Image (cartoon, rainbow, N blue to C red; front, side, top):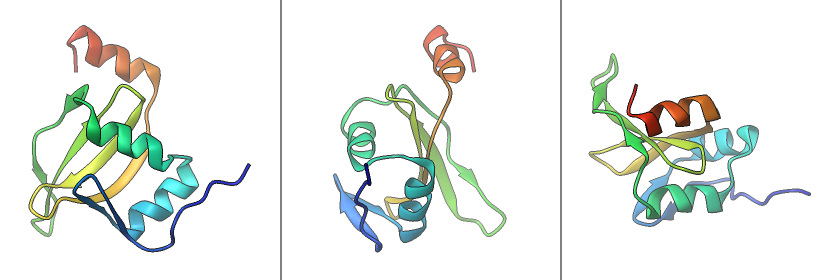
Length: 97
């Protein structure tokens, strides 16, 4: 079964999904519906805002469907998305980090 993803950036729930994120989602098997679930439901865990070497802010949002998103809070851009392991989800549920 082949999943359809647009090649360019698009918008989901008020967030802009960058073209880099689209490429990463394709290669990592993250679907648009998983992305939508992450944005519509309360996050399981959210990291604090961190800055990279160029001064760009981002935070990571983890959801119960085991998908993590890196989001720029200034522009509401989703920079990348990936799946994470059940062990990490269990740590979040137990309150450990």
